[in-house]
Length: 115
Image (cartoon, rainbow, N blue to C red):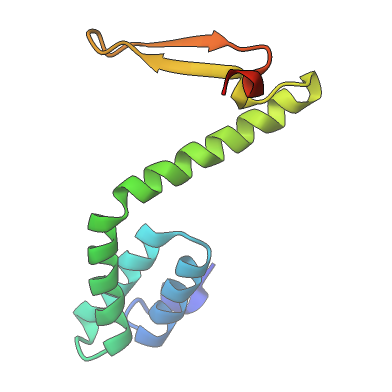
């Protein structure tokens, strides 16, 4: 996809561009790897150093946020599948048994009436 990097893996500018592209397409692990590679080749590149520091602080702070986003995406997918049947993920209640850690799923006909 990036012939310049394939031809010359030490080409810092191409690595930076690829890292930016990875960031924009939410391939954050790949972006971080490219930024680290840039820093190994040229530690004075401020953009790469800053991106690595931001990535490190975000990875510590965003784990709950990422989990929430993943759940929202799964709900969206579930709603896409259930919509043709007149259902949504709101029709299903998930409860965890505190003693065993297992989950049970219950169907609710009219979820808005139970609130």
